[in-house]
Length: 425
Ligand code: AMP
Ligand code: GLY
Image (cartoon, rainbow, N blue to C red; front, side, top):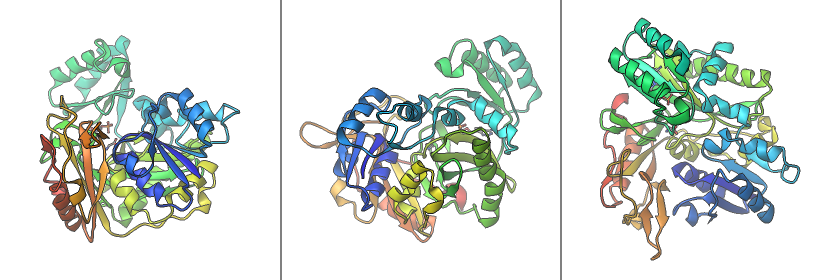
């Protein structure tokens, strides 16, 4: 089978790595890919949001399966675009329809969906520029900290958590009136703050059946001890040690099953991943957000633990026959540590040579923001640059190996967090 992956991050490199292991994959393309995916398949210079170009390439190369990595092509309706086009409707697509993708594309829609199917989540109300004053009044009824969320996609930056009421009111006004996050904050969801420890659960579904993939914990803040600005993710651990059988059963019964039931009830075409961001409050799970794709860097620890043939799992998903596929998981722990460019998540430089790649031994190296320069050297090309994934009997053992290997890599102004797992001890 000829397969095309859309995206260019560590997530897509990991998909490429697993897909290439399958005997069912004859040829693999990645659009646009990075220096890591180039070692596995063929990179194609196509923007994942340029559906017309993708269609042309799919027809030209006889691609049979499309795996959509990031959320924006999904929210922009890539799946519907191809399904509605007779020339290309045979293409197997891993990624939900536009209606499905709205679970990530609109925070308000996600909250309404959870409300309809009794899925536990923080209490909320949503506001528009017209109801700004009501929003400020609503804030007065809540206790600090105040959680403000831009309704639409804001590249992971649309959530503000503020301790001060006046500041919260000012930021609400900035979001609604001054378009702090552009169109994404033309509507704002204000939520009750939930206190607890976060984890993520990944579900593969064909809209009818589902399989729960390994859990993972991501470290989002730039600074040690979970301080400083939010990033795309500085590292991840899978499985999450505190997600024991009893807790997982609660997640499956209270969250996963009603989510799939809701999709079915609303006849939403959903063939792909549901990434459920959760918070454990006391002994109970609450949903913080849905994403309609895999996480990054969570993919770098979740997929390497899947022992079953990933192409089989993905094509059964796309065909609506997921029940026929099997899922076997490596019981060991996987960890990944992400090296980033100095300055990230604010301004940073690109184009720095990455050295030491040939010295990494007992870890997998996944490229996130890399490219190859004219001299054929691997250079940095993003904020998050490269990650090392390792296995161990527990997260401490695995982290030791991830760290030993990230230390073998070097580029100017490289930074990584040295405290992953600090909150699990
Ligand atoms: P989101 O983009 O919805 O994942 O939110 C970003 C981060 O904000 C989450 O990973 C949480 O750390 C935090 N967060 C979001 N909603 C809440 C909430 N209701 N209570 C506490 N923390 C939250
Ligand atoms: N690591 C968080 C995300 O992929 O959204």
